[in-house]
Image (cartoon, rainbow, N blue to C red; front, side, top):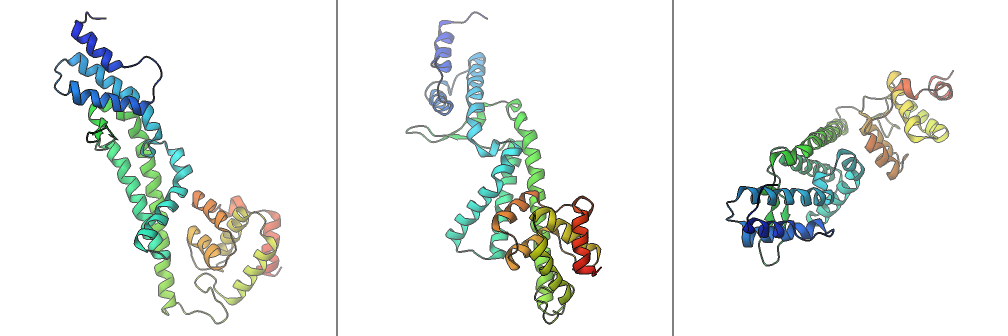
Length: 291
């Protein structure tokens, strides 16, 4: 180690702090206060470097509790619950309820999450530390570009995931517009077919209800096969998987809230090839094809 002056040793003792294990946030508060009181005009490059290294060490531990810096798996695990909390709070604040309002709030929340990740990539992100009797201090100003590099890769993965979630809502809005046009008479509703935006005839609707009443055991794989087979036989109008499942949940009341939320994490149904079985094929043929 290089020879250190008495002054350098004294400052380093202040930077390194207590030897025992300490709370990362408390240490960041101490280091920020040290900078304000003592180091803000420091010119010694070695001391500045050691101060920044100490900040980075404690900040790495502290960021584990900051959801902006969680990895992709953590985001996926908590995304649905946190979205629901955001919507619930905003609806209370704004009185903004209903399907359209919730969709807009969801998109707004996803947009905020994307902006947070972009701020990590372009280094504009702020991590403020509260200091007693002082203004909060942004400790990102003390870290190197390399410090954020490990978080930038995860940030890009999360942006890709969140953009895919936004695409789902775009599909949903397109389908909502399609349904609105139908309700205005662009697609005439058949008498006795209450869901003519999905089923092409009353007979298909009746058969659908018979099939779902008797042959749905595993909601995901059974409805995957049913939708894909109905599409293949051209018995239903084209609907994205998410809109189809929304109709099952909100309009037909055939799947529970928990099942719809579980589907939403998957974001799509299984293919016909992957979901078909001899039993499902036989049950479908007996009801819809009458063979």
